[in-house]
Image (tube, rainbow, N blue to C red; front, side):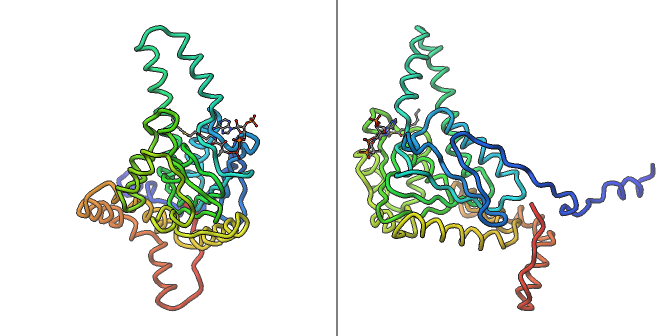
Length: 299
Ligand SMILES: CCC/C=C/C=C/C(=O)SCCNC(=O)CCNC(=O)[C@H](O)C(C)(C)COP(=O)(O)OP(=O)(O)OC[C@H]1O[C@@H](n2cnc3c(N)ncnc32)[C@H](O)[C@@H]1OP(=O)(O)O
C-alpha cells in the first residue's frame, strides 16, 4: 500500500452515518425517560426512603451519568426526585451496615482501606454530574439535605420550588463533609461567610435566600411547573450544536478551577480543533442568513 492509499483509508467518514442509538441501562433507584428528543429525565426513585442515599443509589448515579456522558442520543439531563421531598441525604441504614463491615476488622489500616474506598466511591458518584459533558439541570422540591447538597452543587443549573430548603447537614451527624459540597459550594455562591455559616450550623437555607445567594437561579410555585420549565430549557439547549454546548461545559468547568489565562489557553486549544467542525459552519450560516435552525449530527 502506498502513502496515498493509506491517507485515503484514514480519511474520516461523517459521524452521522455511524451514529448508533444506545439503549439506556435500567436502574433500580433511578427512573429514566426521554420527554423530548435528546432530553433525558433522570428521577431519583426511592420515595419510601425519602430518596436517601444507600449503596445502590450512589452506584446508580455514577453509572447513569457516565453512560449518559457517552450516549449520543442525550444532549441535556434534567435531574429530579420522586415523592414528597428531594432527598433526606445519607441513608442511616446503610451506615449501620458499614459499621458492621468495619467491626469485622480490628486493625486500623484494614478499616481505613474500607473507608477510603467508600469515600472515593461516593465522591465519584457526586462528581459524575460534573464530569458528564452534557449539561445537567437539577430541580429541587422540598428538602435537599446533606448528600443532596453535594449532588446539586455538581450540576450546571439549579431550580427549586417555593417550599424547598437546603441544608449542609453533615456537621449534625458528626462529620466533616467530604464528598464535594465544601469544595463546590464556595464556587457556586459568592459569599464565603455564608458558606461557612451554612457548613458550621447545618441550618436551613430557604428557597428565597437560595435564589438571593445564587444557589438556584429560579424559584417555582410547584414541582410540576418547575419540571415543565426545566424540560423546555433543556429542549432549547438540545437544539443547539452539541459541539458548542459540550465545549462550553468543558470550558466553564475547567475555567472555574484555573486562572483566566489557563482557561483562555484551554479553550484556544479546544477551538482550534472544534471550529473545523461542520456545526460551526452550519450554525454560523443559519445565523448570518436568518435561515432555519440547523439540525446537528449526533455527538
Ligand atoms: C462518607 C459519607 C459521605 C456522605 C455524607 C452524607 C451526609 C449526609 O447526608 S448528612 C444528612 C443526613 N440526613 C439527615 O440528617 C436527615 C434526617 N431526616 C430528617 O431530618 C427528616 O426525616 C426529614 C426532614 C428529611 C423529613 O422529616 P419528616 O418529619 O417529614 O419525616 P420523618 O418522620 O422524620 O421521616 C420519615 C421516615 O423516613 C426515615 N428517614 C428520614 N431520613 C432518613 C435517612 N437519612 N436515612 C434513612 N431513613 C430516613 C425516618 O426514620 C422515618 O422512618 P419511619 O419512622 O420508619 O417512618
